[in-house]
Length: 190
Ligand SMILES: [Zn+2]
Image 1 (cartoon, rainbow, N blue to C red):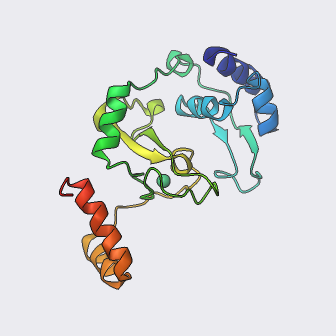
Image 2: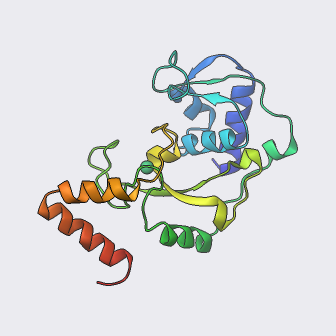
């Protein structure tokens, strides 16, 4: 099923079930079986749909979702989000050092949330589209899958220098060397 079709299916399904808890299996079915149903769901959230999961509400189990209120009626909410261009994507990743800007996971690191997989980075909005955030370089950042889906629902400040240096001094020599390698690579002094 096409991208548009799978999202439309999700919309219709959810609109008929405001306030009703639905399962991920039902949502995937509503999306025509599309494997990307979770991404379509996220796009609806970005467009201002009040879709809640266990990350937002303690009464929901993992895999349970609920559209908490009627979706927004604005045209913007129904507009399809355009994919971010490859060029901007590459620029954002480069600028962010191929590192998740929330938790610090790097592309290719082992993914703690998905054993056996490696971290994949996505491009996320700093100011959400639903709040008028644009697809501009200044409003975009690299996020790992978990942070992008709000799974690690914590706003993390970047570590402060004193703390960072303290941690580095405490670390094992091998880890200090790994940090040095990473910094050399990042700043092109390899
Ligand atoms: Zn992350």
